[in-house]
Image (cartoon, rainbow, N blue to C red):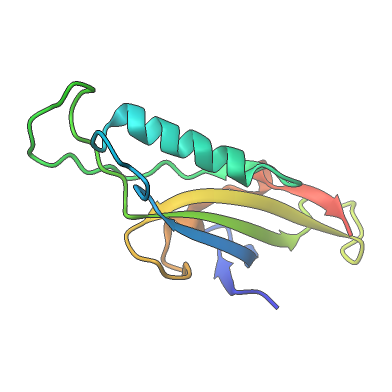
Length: 137
């Protein structure tokens, strides 16, 4: 059973089978949200997401509050919740038997609230055929 189904802009339906939500800046003891901190956070999420399927990062929307720059540059804030989701769909390759194959992709993205994504999220624009990989069941 999937956690949710999303119909992509291409018309393909993908299913979310696993979801990890975490506070984006949990554990930030020193410093402030800025490009070097954000780059480290994104790199850590991508390492965690590595596994049996390809990994894709949806570029986050950054906020630049009107605050003075610190030692590491301007303040740059990621959305509050970081997400790692394992998605699957029918096979990408038309020659693959639909009973024996499905396509899979792990996606990393950020969102403002800790909710299961819906059809109106940035996930709708995934280029599934270019990013996902077929796997034999």
